[in-house]
Image (cartoon, rainbow, N blue to C red; front, side):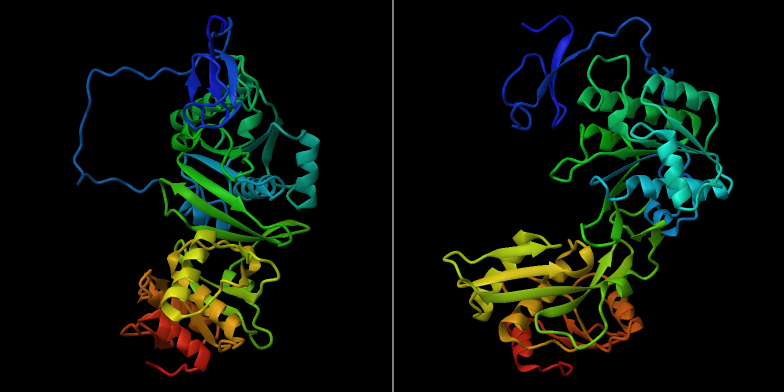
Length: 456
């Protein structure tokens, strides 16, 4: 029998049960229910209660609303993802794999903002002050007026932020904080929810911008209950493939800016360096393009990005051919292979297929369908695509090549980098490049086979 005041919280989804079971009824995960006491010991931290009002004051949609002020940190790629800077009173959650550089990035952001006049603090629950200071010296940030603290007690952090006025505070990380209002251990669902809720309320009440660092699970999702992602104003994912120096800050949620915006950095000995032109970084313009490679003109957030998609089609040495993909959706690859077989007569049943997005970038938009199909056909036919050609277009299950959004922006970015022609949907009325249009995938694959790249 459970003790008085005890509940069982799922460490995967945050669902609360009154009794223990081996499988969580909410998310189906096994052995994730942990007993947590809900009773609060004497002297525990009391959460702020909302102020009661006599009534509600309604306003119309046409009322004038001033744009929110911004704290411009000076790290342009970070400010781009934020929507122009950090909004005072907002809460931002930054997640990423261990060792990807979250602490390095946020220390640079805090130091840059402090040098521009903002009052900044960096509170670490994972490292001692000496470790943070040593990293700052290595990165050349020792002269930045950033206040440092090492603390995990939520009560002490909240009291310290109330006593000392700041404009921007970094909490590294939310999983290390604990509140004496709950008997669960640090990192549990209850503690993460309580710490995030109290810090968000403090940010809204005092106009303080709070940046929370979050750990991720082995599946890549931010650890803890999903309610934390609903509490905060913005959720950023800091991504990076092992073996590549490139790091990508991607906005998954932003109440004050565009979602899916990206900022690109390069990890070096002195920290993270901003990449002003990601297209030039992800492309290899030296030498002739080999068979199986296609340059995709994509859109990430508000900026066009060119990246090389590489494919290899080889005879299979086993009964079941392999399908391996890096940087793209494996389900999307399976669909493209099925369309190529059904609509274009290409057979992959006895061949291994490997697909890779060069540079460590991950692509999610459907406009990469035609570039992947062209790379696969190029490898299967052993025919290289033109060196000065970019490819984009969405493929339907019927084998139709469909138009994509912002075609003109893609073509202008390609022209800026020296490309002279494009292969994709129908030619727009005004374009920066010569476009070889194709309305059917079968026609596009035939052009790859024949090397016919004249304007349609």
